[in-house]
Amino acid sequence: MRNKYFMLLIMLSFLFVGCATTMNVELKDQTGRVMPDPHYVLHGIENPIQVLFFYTAYEEVSDVDGTVIGKPKFLDLLTHHDIFAEKTKRITLTIQVNNPNELEYSLYRLIKLQVGDARREVHFGDEINRSKLPQRQFVYSLPYSEDVRAADYLITLQVEGSGVMEIGTFRYNLIH
Image (cartoon, rainbow, N blue to C red; front, side, top):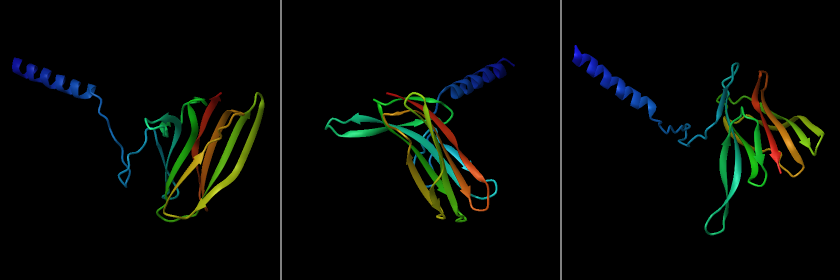
């Protein structure tokens, strides 16, 4: 009887140690590329379109030979970010669309900017791309200049004759 409890204690110890250690999990897409973390995936309900997207801030880092390289930092969609302009040189949104039935779709953009101290500009409903290709990648630079203080950036994907997929609103403050 004591041996059973002793074995149970040993097995629980191994289980505890196994659960407590952190594993470095590497996610890869179909082509073998490592996926950034965090990234987000949307699946169409009425159609087989799949959208993978992620936001990236690039900080400039100098190499030993003087070459300036953009070091990526992947950003969480659910966080309202404070981005320091002196460190971060640009912010991008990367969208990868998998469209196996080659349906026609359009991407639209909504941008709300706080320029200066009080003025708010809204750019609404600009169609920025249209495609029917089975796979396509889009990379957009988010508004980033001296006069921009805050921004809300939203992309929607409209499939012809079908619903809309909303690629969540990304919010950030630029601190100059």
